[in-house]
Image (cartoon, rainbow, N blue to C red):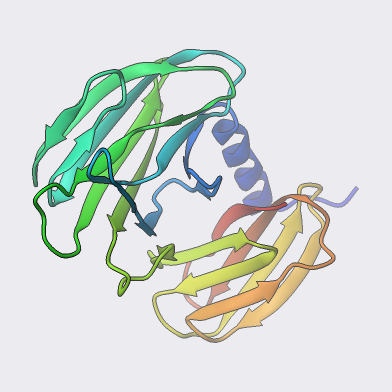
Amino acid sequence: MKKISTFFIAAMCNMASLAQGLAFQLSDGTVLENGTELTVAGHDDAEAMELHSGLCVKNLTSKQTGLYVKTKAISGSIQVCFGGTCVPLFEGMESEKMGVLPANEVVDLLIGAPTFMVSGYITRKIEVTAWLANAVDEKVTITLTFTNDPALSVEEVKATPAKVYAKDNVLYCQFADAANRQLQVYNVAGNLCKDIRLTSESESLPLEGMAKGVYIYRVMEASKKAESGKFLVK
């Protein structure tokens, strides 16, 4: 039997631990990896007079459990209504709330930015950390900027320091700078599916012909530690 490399075993262990917890996702179903920095477009709500971030959390387990959510307003004022009550937060303030997360369910965290009596466009930046009551050591954190300014990019994932993700049957690779890198993609059986040289700071690779499922990637660059992670082909 072919020996599976150490990085692949480590990545699989990572996947196993993630599969027992929770994950952030957007209202359109886009799953966000831990540590993601994302810019999304909020939408105007004429009745509530606020921009809604569309940030949700998904229970990846088959059991109902308590959910803790810690939110920090990095810039601008926001409002968090998860857990049954609404708490306004101004820049630099943070709040920790608890609610119930049903088994295998997605719950909207109801984070918004008031637009009442605000002229022009607004942009808000927040940091959100979530964890399950029965797994306090398995926290996930994202930084989210939401805005109604059309001049700002929508769904722009910042490379910190590298970001590899799949969307609409395309694999996107984003890095801090251009360099010679090697991208290897493995399936869950440990078989090498792709081995591609990358040279620019932004690459997009079609995934046509690849079976649906989870894949492991490894990015190698001279004199640097290889980075690995996973993505899903739908």
